[in-house]
Image 1 (cartoon, rainbow, N blue to C red):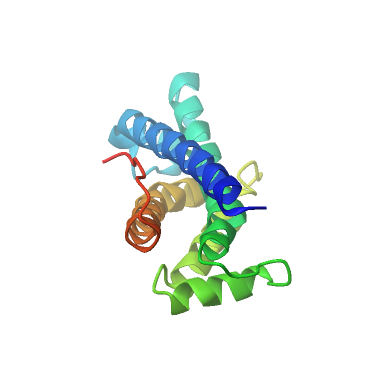
Image 2 (tube, one colour; image 1 turned 30 degrees about the horizontal axis):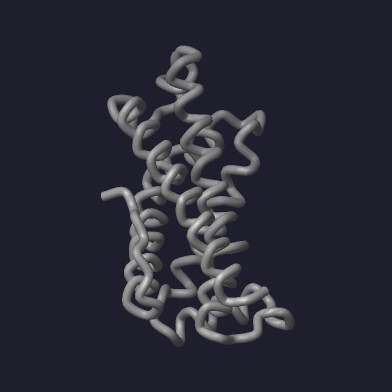
Length: 164
C-alpha cells in the first residue's frame, strides 16, 4: 500500500470513528438520567431507552475495533514502519513508545469490552454492571481517540476533523 492509499484509508477510518463518537454522545445524552443503572431501573426501562443502551454498546465496540484494527496500524504505516509481522501487543508497545497512548489503559478498555460482550447474560446484575462500566469507559475511549488524532495532526501534518 502506498503512502497516499494509507493516508486515504486512514482518513476514511477517522471519519468512521467520528460517527461512532457522535452516536456514543447521542446515546449517552438519552440515557444520562438513568445512570448509573440499578437492576431495578434496568428491568423497568422501555424499549427506546434500551435501544440507546444497545447503541452505546455497539458504537463503543465498533470504535474500539476500528481504532485497534485500522487506526493503530495505519499510524505506524504512516510513520514508515512495517506492521506485517507485528502482533497487536507489538503495535500497542510501539504506540506507547511514541507516546500516542498508554498500553495498559487500552488493555483495560479491552477488558471492559470483553465484559460487555456477555451483555445478554442471564445474570441481570452482571448486565447492569457491564452497562455502567461501558457508560463510564466511553469517555476514556473518546479521550484516547482525541489524543490519537492530536498526535497524527502534529506528526503527519494532516487535517483531521474530530467531534469536539
